[in-house]
Amino acid sequence: MDETIFQNFPDGGLIKTVDEPNGDLSSEQKAQLNRRGNAIFNTGDIETARRIFQTTGYSDGLMRVGESYMRAGQPVDALKMFKLSHDQLRSAELVERAAQAIRKMLTEKEKV
Image 1: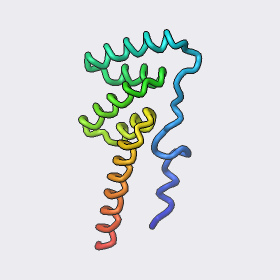
Image 2: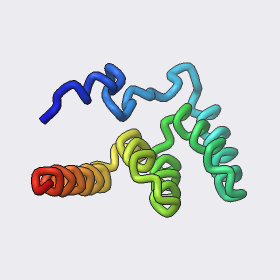
Image 3: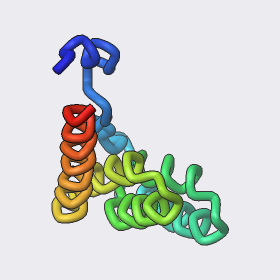
């Protein structure tokens, strides 16, 4: 296997998982932002809602954004949201699917 391919990846890998909630927000501010994020999400503006949910660390909102990404055929973005929301089951499922896809690609490449 050509190991040089990994040199093209960012230092942190493919998924940035250090998106920490803003620690300077009070509980009241987070609640207000989460309500606003939910309202925005319900209008279909997923990206604005995602930014709010990442800022507050609202795991339920992040899970819903991840589900939305899955419906849109964006499994890598969905994986990031599931990781940030600490949804271990869905994260593990997507990682396993990715591993199976990579195995299949490698097997097909070996046949050529």
